[in-house]
Image 1: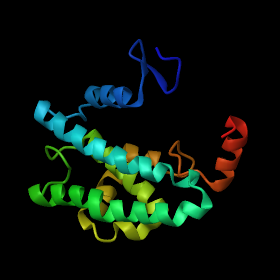
Image 2 (image 1 turned 180 degrees about the vertical axis):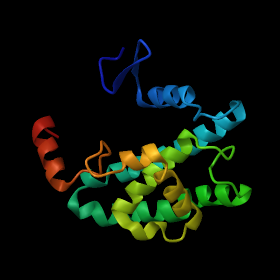
Image 3 (image 1 turned 90 degrees about the vertical axis):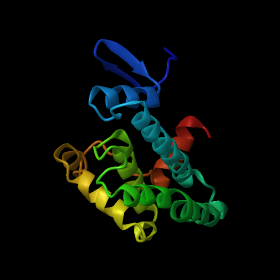
Length: 172
């Protein structure tokens, strides 16, 4: 459609745009809430996750003289803005998952974000026991557990060597 990736062929269609693909898969597999209210909550939570995800994703591209400031921003936003929201949601309803006490795309995306945070600075998760429990719970689901095994398709944050190679190839 837009001559770009990602593009996924599924159910006889060519799907493009990351969020559209995720929403389609989540809907198809009953991970997108039972009604519009639950879908709204899932969307609000996931959009907040994207905000933090974007900050973390840019860390490897940050010039060396700005890394400390970027890490301080990640730490502040993680501990003071984003993770407290998700911890509070889990605490407020006392259920195992963010929405409707059922696994949703919000839980899966949050666990992926928690892994990214842990790769940057594991201590950032220390004050969030309910999020740590969610991470463990979701990580132990059979298909997720299989996906997280060494050699899986999950990609960690890029290394400095990977960034240097990308800079050469894409000339940025």
